[in-house]
Amino acid sequence: MSSLLNDGDLGHETTVVWVEDPERLDYVRQSLDKTPRRRGKPRYERDGRMIGYTELDEHAEADPDSGLHLRRVFFLLPHDRDTQPTGLYEDGAPGEAVDPSTIEPGRVGEKTPRSQRGSAEISTAGR
Image (cartoon, rainbow, N blue to C red; front, top):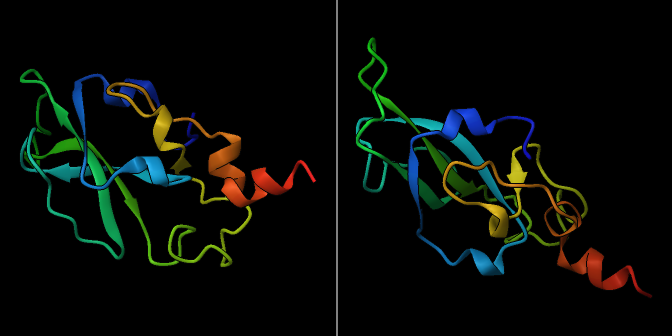
């Protein structure tokens, strides 16, 4: 599990919606973003691109001060492994990176050999 989130933060998630196919990605970054709605595609205001997001059930309450809901967003930055395979994360991954195949509603994604070392590292390990 990611050290940055825990399952208790995700209790009202019902669905993971993928904007891009996660099967081709070694990892995605995950964060909790404040959004005005429980469902639908949230606004994305950081570098890189949104890969997916979660939707919440009707019982998820907004923060009483801001009126915003905390929802998980999955994303990649321009210097991540998918666009720069020999770059900064050729080996290793950012702290919030998890294997997208381990993501499901209400459960934090997991770090796996694929997410931490990448496909190239796994294929060269057997040499």
